[in-house]
Image (cartoon, rainbow, N blue to C red; front, side):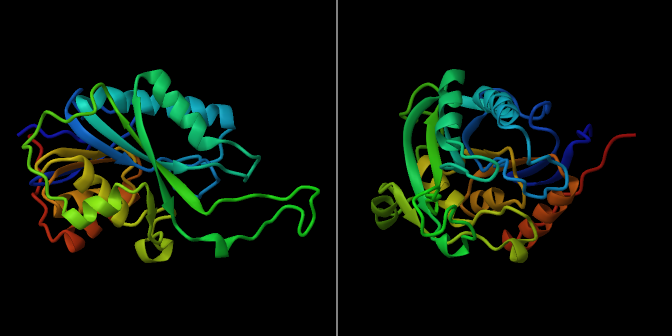
Length: 266
């Protein structure tokens, strides 16, 4: 059996690819129903294999490259849920959400809507600019964005046509203000995890049962766990082998699956 060296872990309906999003050849074009991801925010988070402190222009160039790859991987009726900051002030104020949304549209993505995720983390603030002074105050919103894009057509025509979103979920989640807490870095063991509630909602709202979901910045594997537990095929790409191992351990425990051992032909 010929197996790619980049396949780090594989089980039925689930695959972890240890590779670079910009160069990987493991994802066929037009094969993905939904991409959910939270890319590096360029706020100097201490990843083990990524420089998260680029010049802003270089960060946008990097974003354009990986967004283009995602565009190629999506089916024509594929959707894209992109979790990014509204803005940032560390290292200078930048309109990150607006800039990346604009780049996405330039690549060819069509815009559907933006969900505001209210993390409620304002208590963690440590900087206010000019304290109690109008000279230079910082205005910081304790929210993140989930920008909902699609490739060519919004109405989904491929797949099983079987939805599993409940009435109460549909009514709540189609309100574009989502309020739930973020995830603990210490608990997960990753510097920037997101809570499983985020991909769970996106998966149930925007895909049919049996669809294929991709997270090209897999990190600790949260999207894969959410997708697997909700009867989707899931793929994660992660450049860092340490995080691949972390995701594998979490998936085995939280998704309760067993690894299918992979042997390479000699």
